Length: 338
Image (cartoon, rainbow, N blue to C red; front, side):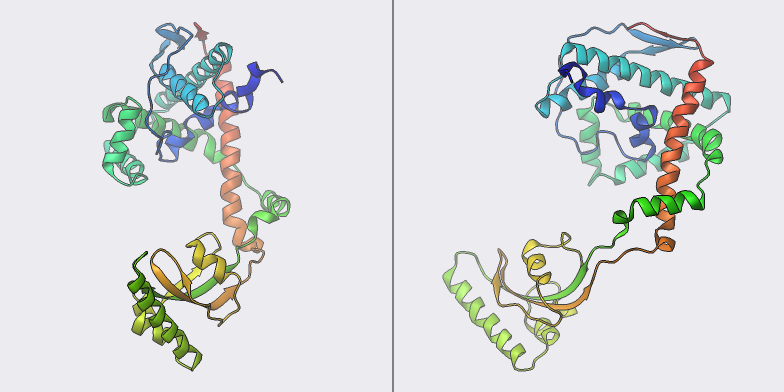
């Protein structure tokens, strides 16, 4: 395949639904991205790139998304050629046309977004960031004001209403669909092996010989008491120097990749009720006891059913939305000027 068609499996496969799905799910398309700088374009777009049923589509959003796409590919070490840039711009314009068609349909069916609904959605978006300042920083990186973003968010909520009223009610997921998906994707419904463990920590200052020696003597004494009949829970409650001490050092259940590696690699190689030898981390010296084990097992269909139905419904809504927009295109007057 020639380099000219390199983006076809990435950018150019972008459908209407994928193009604004990030907004509809309540998160910013650029959430948690790094700092962006202005990319220089090799193509020139007219001020009005298309007309949809008499409505002008201006180049503002196209330019912003195009520059973002160029930077993403450049950062990945596969900068787009001038021809690829042109193809990408055309696809972005087509996506904007599709958005315009859905928005026009929204006005036709009297879809409305109240200030309360918009504020609720905005709060949900903000909650996906660690702080409001990080959210505001992302807006600044994307050269968007809060009012501009709220305008975009309102448009996407209007389009969602079209989907909810015109498309969603016609979507059916049968028991046969669910059963078939389950049978073909059983590997997705195997629960992870989980263990439960408790830990004792005796802190030691790294590089401080005196501190490390004192911690070593203390934890070896604790281990000796456990070997002589003291319970791990009792020793953890009495001597452990971390926040889990009041709980007897209980870490609860965890999968292999859900916890600190030094604990995980030991816990998953121990037998229930086994206590590890003393081991060292950056915090100090530890003892670990495996208290329970849950082997991974196949999730039965009745438990997987709700999850499968959501997956299938989402896929069907996406396909139906694309078909719906194609029908809108056939009944509309559309002109592209690029």
